Image 1: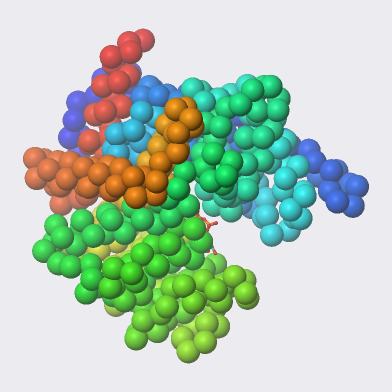
Image 2: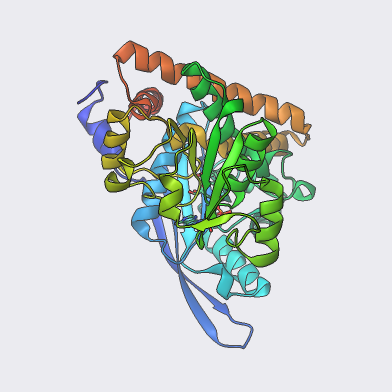
Length: 397
Ligand SMILES: NC(=O)C1=CN([C@@H]2O[C@H](COP(=O)(O)OP(=O)(O)OC[C@H]3O[C@@H](n4cnc5c(N)ncnc54)[C@H](O)[C@@H]3O)[C@@H](O)[C@H]2O)C=CC1
Ligand SMILES: O=C(O)CCC(=O)C(=O)O
């Protein structure tokens, strides 16, 4: 059912990316042989500002996935009201199979290929799955060297010493927790009393678990792609992270029971945080989700059919475009600091982040009330789509 009126032509335009680069990168392996990698960058929509979105390294990445992720970035930037459009990119590989030197050559090859498309005012990449400050530093250096300039705002998520922002690494987990706090408060409950399960123990998931623990919630289960660990008395997120860093996985964490990822998603907890990849919760599994609130750290963890089941079962789902927007909000402030050649304190960054998340959540609940909706995701898209459509219309054709 349509809730807002959008011109048919504009709707068509917003159903497709503005452009997609698909390329093959060639690098020399450490043994002297050559290897090829498929790589993509989708620029979905730039009506509200430069394209913005991460770069993912993953063996299953493909063109359609990158396009979908770049579309979500468009609406994410709109709902938290930062002046960016949506983009996303990625390289098809499992980084675990490559040395640091090979990953550096590959990242530099991608930056070289993307050079005509990116820039501080054109398209600003950032980290996503399996990338982080290290890759962003390499990207920035390659771009600046080729352009013979300094342009730290060409990517965000850099190391602090290379122009990164305080608070960026923790920002995605932080907004996921702030969004959950707002959802609990909306339901008249306190996050401090909640039990939590976190699926995915990378940048987004582990930070969310740590911040929840610091706020008094009990993290009873966490997982990564190898499986889940559960301790009903509560896990110590920092110690689980130490175990994962030492052993490569959360699995076999001393004192905890080992379970499957599916078990984790259907565990009897108050709050579920999917922080892995897309489509983790499908329609079959959704009926067994026991949590009252889901705060989506991952992009697209809930399929549309699963969403219907969760709504039917009164599960309050804070959609990805709001819950995980902390990453791009702090990326925006990193870009602002880079452009102004200034550096903000972590508390200033965190305060700005919190304002964006709380304001967006308030707009979401006000829209649910205005349209008599029981679905937070639809409300989020009403707010975001109106902003994108208005900007597009004001620019004209
Ligand atoms: N890093 C960032 O700033 C942002 C990340 N996100 C999203 O958050 C999600 C996670 O990203 P990061 O934490 O950055 O990646 P990461 O590479 O740091 O960690 C990903 C984690 O997910 C786990 N995982 C993968 N498949 C899984 C499965 N089937 N079951 C359980 N765990 C699984 C991996 O083992 C790993 O622990 C992605 O959807 C990403 O797009 C969203 C906004 C910003
Ligand atoms: O920080 C950014 O620019 C975008 C991060 C990202 O890829 C995401 O929010 O999914």
